[in-house]
Length: 279
Image 1 (tube, rainbow, N blue to C red):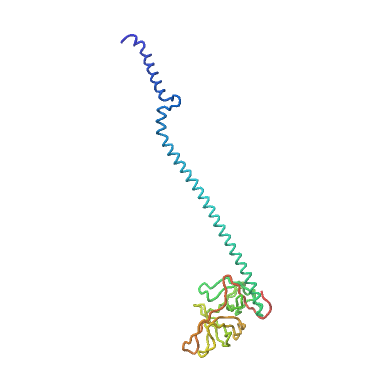
Image 2 (cartoon, rainbow, N blue to C red):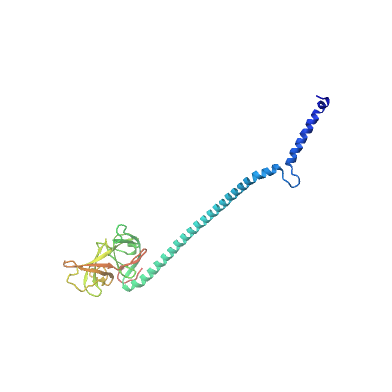
């Protein structure tokens, strides 16, 4: 090997390495506005991935925003439903209060014309087993109520009578539709009297002891109390005859529909005695 090469070998190798380094740098550093091969390759490979990732992130963000918006709408709807329910309840209570005041005023004005002392009451319960048997009212012994006192509705139509048990603030009313109820009645248009007996199962009454030969009473005729039982004052509307049949026995089979009208909460009156005012 020549002596020159031996002495310059390291310098030549160093010069070659510097040339290769400059060549690599020239491929990576852009000249003017032109991108390098490395940048173009990275851009070509990474840009689609970046676009997909950005779209996915945007979609997740939009989904989250819609979820939050839906939750807010759901919360608002729940608040609105609660508010509507509360307003409906308040409206029902107000209507109920107005109905009670109206019924009490009408009842007081009408019942004073009966010439009997009375106590107004409201229905607070109905016989759960047989609604046509009895009701419970919110007046009792401390209000002057006693056994066998007549009970009428706000228009003076016969409802029944007070029976035991009677408490200080509550009392039981036997309806005229109870099987054990009997009321002396007569026809309004024809002076024919009989006993109005209850029929719990059907919620109607039957008119008993009308002779099969009687041809005066007709379907649609009104019945009122006759006062013969010394319990109910005469003239209280009691029922309307809905059917008359001759069953081949001594007496006719007559079905009567009661005319009393009560609804929850109903205002009724207990006739407590002779004239003397109302409560």
